[in-house]
Amino acid sequence: MSKIEILPSLHRVIDCLRYVIKQRMDHYLGRETAPKASPEFILPLQSPLGEFIARHQLNQQEITVLFLALIPHIYPSFYDEIFASYIDSPTDFPQLGGVRAKSGRNFLPTGQTALFILAGQELDKRIKFQHVFNPQHLFSKERILWLEDVAEGEPFLNGKMILAAELSSYFINGKLPLPNLSINFPAQHLDTQLDWDSLVLPEETKLQIEEIIRWVDHHDYFQSQWDAEQHFKPGYRSLFYGPPGTGKTFTATLLGKKTNKPVFRIDLSMVISKYIGETEKNLSSLFNQAERKDWILFFDEGDALFSKRTNVRDAHDKYANQEAAYLLQRIEQFNGLVILATNFKNNIDEAFTRRFHSIIHFPAPGNAERMQIWEKVLPGKAPKSGEIDLTSLAKKYELTGSGIMNAVQHACFLALATNSRAITQEMLLAGIKREYGKEGKIW
Image (cartoon, rainbow, N blue to C red; front, side, top):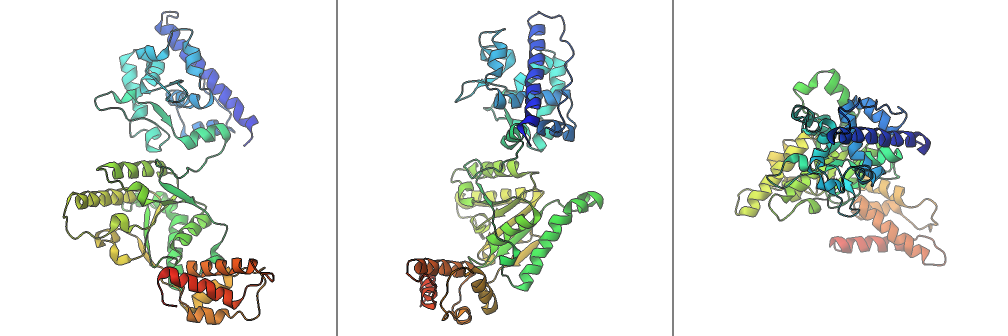
């Protein structure tokens, strides 16, 4: 979407808010006997903001709150400039609420700011309009806009208004960015240039993967049109298990590519905290951001939270069980696809495995699968000596898919360092020997 289509809607936001705020301040300070009717907040439907408002059927008060949260992202000094004609500093005017940004020092609106602009000091209206910040309101349920947590004992309306980062970017640039791996979002986006033809799996495993694809393709219709919401939870949970390097992460990535859904690998080492309550807080932040985004969540090395604990020996075991229970609760509430991966199925507590819709085994590749992998990963344009015998390599050396890829890459760079630049059987064997050493196997 071009800036030409977006800019008029952003100018309209500035003009509408300026009018509404001036009306409220003039009325409050006695310059006007009553605030005039607000202008219609009609934006071009072809703009991201206009389309968003129309799709969610927001009313005037909801649009005002949305604009109040958006304006610091497009015009940081807006509030300070408009309030300067009325008061020395807006943060010294308690009726306005608001806080100062930690870096830019500009005024940022709170829930109190929104209620003052919407209702002034009229108690009945202030109570009426508080619903926009309730957990059951669209803004909170869809993680569009919310109030920052406040210190215990403070009114929740003192919380700073937060607009979802991806929405502010969408309204301003017309694009919905994917979040980056960080402490606040301990998940990494997985993507690949490869396709399903590059995946080598046993036929039985492939058939089980197709079950997941069918769920992704049809679950919306199933839930909404067949009245399934009463009896079936909206999400789908699958456990992938098998040795390292057998295609669990690659399969999850390809599922996202085939179904056109972003896949995020959750780094449980960043989620799990030694401090009581912090793990649940980290998980809550992650799921709150992922909720209703139609993402696929991939928990690698799920043993970290779901391993068996036959008895509780100390406080660590007690809280580890609580953390696992909380994660399971959030996974069951999640309305999309969740995949948990582990190297050893037996490490996962049966109380957890019963909650999965499918449990899919990714075995180490057999002779036939290894042959396919060797043929696929050996670069087609690379010069090769006539002595290469992939059949014997596949038959004799039991490597996983990732092991074969590492061996081929090692051989390729050995070849590139020679004058002929041709890959030889000896180079491939050197790569295999290297992989055997890494895995502690006898050569």
